Image 1 (cartoon, rainbow, N blue to C red):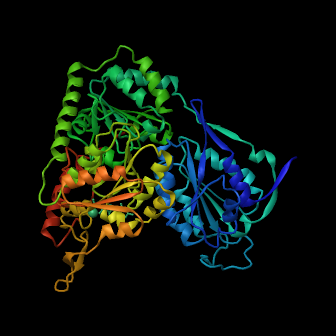
Image 2 (cartoon, rainbow, N blue to C red):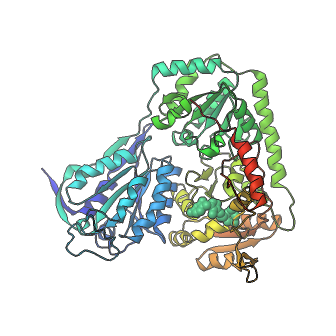
Image 3 (spheres, rainbow, N blue to C red):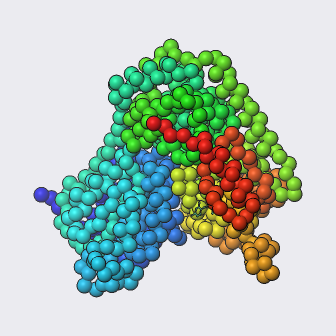
Length: 620
Ligand SMILES: Cc1ncc(C[n+]2csc(CCOP(=O)(O)OP(=O)(O)O)c2C)c(N)n1
Ligand SMILES: [Mg+2]
């Protein structure tokens, strides 16, 4: 048998380089390189292997958590057909990746995590940063990755790579099972040499399947649709990952079934299509939420039905409502006691279309959807042009960014009040134009994620919209974008703290407690003094970005034009009125209010809460 003598780290990289993915006849290398930060746990092992193998590019980042967000965003933008690896030292570098791993796994996005680990040999323990436990020597902080990984392994012996790596690839490339894959690499094992079989490094093509639905279930699904008077499609992220947007549009046009979108599914339909009723759920439009409330058949495509989509199980009030779920993951297909069409979204939609020939919803129902679409667009225009004084409203900033961006450009966001406002207000013109991480809604994803999006498709302008809170949590990857010459346009919304949680706090009777960026007031002992003097512009400039500030709409528009001309990462700082919020429309979110309280406002909120909660339903 032909062999190649390599260290574990060298062999790992050579294997990764040989992995190819194919779907619909299109082939590409699965891995685009490795992000990471070196420490003693990885510098001599994987660090050396990366150095001697420039074909597998190493990207230096500032924060390990950010690296995983960048990798997840890269995979999402590539519809999960490409991925990045992330490496860290042992200890804190590794645990920094856990938040990112949870985000990737929750969002079903492939990322390969390669944390260094403590010595397998053990004789020098405890090493710097080692967690020692009296009851076992077979544990390290890397065991914390287990619940947030779809596959987890630790490589104690060089030959274990030979059986582990194909399993890692199976999970990473599985449309149903993908997420974070963690291979913990003890620092001594990384450097060990072994005679690996040549065959391990041969190009391997992973065919991404498009599983077709069960014939009996498809038949039943067709009967259910034909019997439905008020069906509604809810398009989730699976529609985009499967590249099923054209099939969805064709099915909607053939059948006259309106389409609503989740955060991950936004962009499944162009915003101005007469059957597009837009965002659904807590952050939904009135039309989508009224149709959801009345629907007798909900067709969920590639959705996990989070509480934002189901309005905490209050969204669907028709007593006769049934669910038909198209999902590549059986787990999600069965939710809400649905008729489960387990399979690839595009493949299932194509089969449904053929089987539904001749079926159409009533013209009046379609006309209603078209009216909702137009009424909503008028509301978007109103909110884009509020003329709010003296500070801009966030909706006006969103309008300016949307109007400055091209149809193929991408908006990236994750946490705060922006995701809800963007879900409602962003006019999406391209399936990949709207990139929200709203499975984990992780503050700090925004800039790191935008970097991953731009790495995935440099031909598009990437607009990162980020709140001041999220920005402070992780501005660090501005440095990486400058280092790599990867241009981002970052629109930083300064509203002196948490508009989102501040608003929520008010609705639960707590008046915004703990959500303002203000000095502690010496008289009251509360955080209730003047605004903190944070200079975001100076901060961003210090990291190497070009910085512009805008106080009104003409200045913001001019800054956005200037940003287009820039070739380097540009940050536009804009102050907004945190109390000028986009309202909710026909929806509700379950956030429990204290049952007893000394505060009258909380008691009042509790009474309203108990009323609203009565609308929650089980679907059995
Ligand atoms: C890592 C993390 N910590 C906490 C939260 C809870 N949270 C959600 S939004 C938010 C405030 C975000 O503030 P900012 O970015 O300024 O946005 P704004 O609410 O002002 O729109 C917080 C603390 C979170 N989503 N992620
Ligand atoms: Mg804020």
